[in-house]
Length: 148
Image (cartoon, rainbow, N blue to C red; front, side):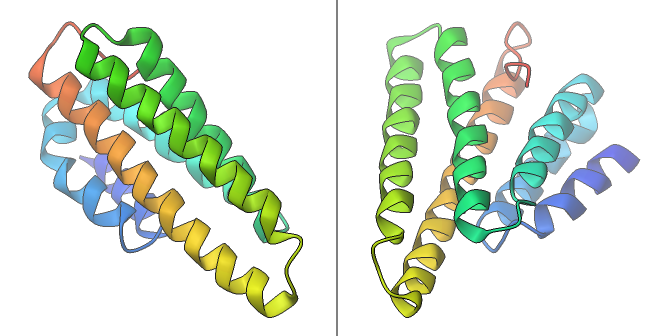
């Protein structure tokens, strides 16, 4: 139970979208210690990425973590739906990288507004990926969250 509580506390720092997604799957994590261990690695990686000094760099690192999880999900995909979902996540990560690059051409006020929008989208993507990977693993004992 302690590990799941730590995952939830770490996710609370991610924002209003990611936290509820992690909290929703907490019961599945409590029932499966191995899944909780893998989920902890994903959450820790995302938290570490967000600790960069500058906001654009933090966003870029966060997108990198999400892209890595999407690529791992793609390599572990067993159905066409799983492949399509993972490819969609990769496409969204590419769009977020492009948006981060475009932030630098705006003035300070517009950069802040753009960064807020990108950060919100990064949190939504994290919630989608994390929830899908945990729920997929819960439905089938043969699948696991791809290792971080």
